[in-house]
Amino acid sequence: MAQALHPMLNTAIKAARAAGALINRASMDLDVLKVNAKAPNDFVTEVDQAAERIIIDTLLAAYPGHAILGEETGRTRGAKDSEYLWIIDPLDGTTNFIHGLPVYGVSIALAHRGQVQQAVVYDPTRNDLFFASKGRGAFLNDKRLRVSKRLRLAESLIGTGFPFRKGDDFQRYMQIFERVMQSCAGMRRPGAAALDLCYVAAGYYDGFFETGLGAWDVAAGSLIITEAGGLVGNFTGEADYLYRREVVAGNPKVFAQLVTILAPHTGVGGPPPQSPAADPMPAATPERALAKAVAAAAAGGEPPPPAAAQAGQTDPH
Image 1 (cartoon, helix red, strand yellow):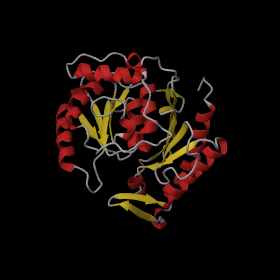
Image 2 (cartoon, one colour):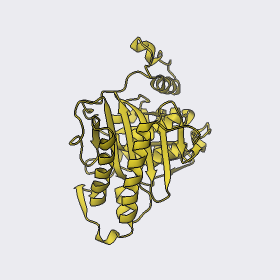
Image 3 (tube, one colour):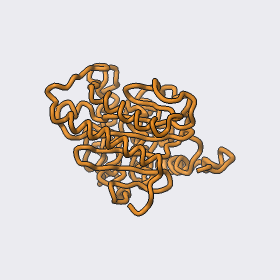
Image 4 (cartoon, one colour):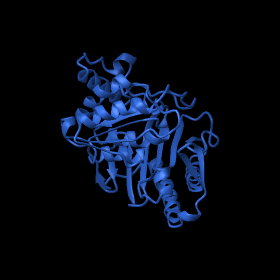
């Protein structure tokens, strides 16, 4: 890497690697693993919990005044009123991990005033480190990432995730699945959304969609995609995906085509939960304006005016 990394990104990388080392050790002795069910088909292991402790301890040692949102611990640690919020999934793909399927990762993002600024997704089984700082590009290890250049959904490989929790609207999801499957070249469901998003950034997938995801599943991967030249939004193409429990991502052309299919099904993931008090909805940004314009064009409508103009100000970042 030619450029020096932001200190907060370096801290996140240190935390992710420490958690990954713990996960790798535990993967060699899965027979003694303690597994609990948070809900039917939604599992948590002692490894998830230990990895989250290591991550939070590392982050708070460097930045004790920052807030924390963890998948396992919620907002119980860290400051309650900080403008900086670390969003953590210590082991994305827990079910894969339990079964010894080596597709899982560590996801860490830092949001400042609601905008994700730093992102790390670490794949410990392959020692692959995806990372990004806002405005400075996205990388896989030492390689700069760019989304794919495919223009047509019909030629595209699309990633997704299946609904698995009790109460999920399976029938409606299957309607979406059928539409997308008939419109693309192929679909994949590895089972770790954070890595799926990174695969879009790397150009392995041309697009991705899923419902029922938490902020910890998508925060890091979303910045990595946008820094690689892609777009991320909810099913209507808007940028409030972080707490909306639905996400679509892709290169700009494929993103627009997916939105036309997904928009009628917005809300499949349920109503948006209240975002953390210290993490208000993102301010107007060029990425939001571009996502709106692409979605509007795909729907045959007029693109809206730039978000910054709507807000009456330019993006401070």
